Amino acid sequence: MVRSAGSQELLLTAAAPIVIEGRTRGGVFLEQAGDQLLALRDRAVTRLFNLTLLATAAAVIVMLGFATWISLRIGRLRSAADSAVSSDGKIRLEMPECRQRRRDRRLVAGIRAPAGAPQRTHASTSVPWAGSCRTNCARR
Image (cartoon, rainbow, N blue to C red):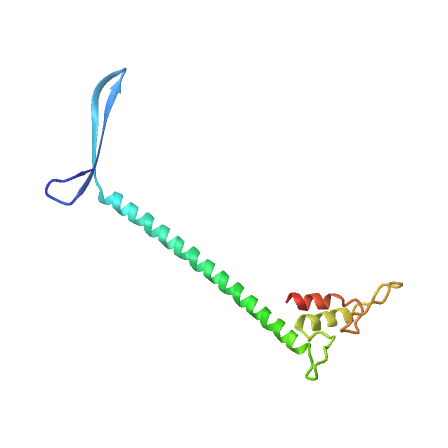
């Protein structure tokens, strides 16, 4: 790289010999303005910055969504814990109703147990084969 004597222009230069059959027959000398190299570098840095900004924004959105989901679950758990003890101090054995449990009840109500199978009833429901209700509510 060479700077011109009287200006601020950057000039890229390269020289190479031309060798034929072991003898130097000539040379090649190239000059190019450095503005293209600077523009290329600026575009690369801009693209890297934009991609980094995009990846950071995506990570922030994912983390915000996860934090919202966790806080909603904690709120439901707090509500369930608050409703587990009655106003007179007795512990209630039934779990609070949730959407998943209502769906399970509707689904299981239409299904009959196979002939000869033992009839199991979940503690908080009268529906046979509804043992997954408690775990589904706890997972939601």
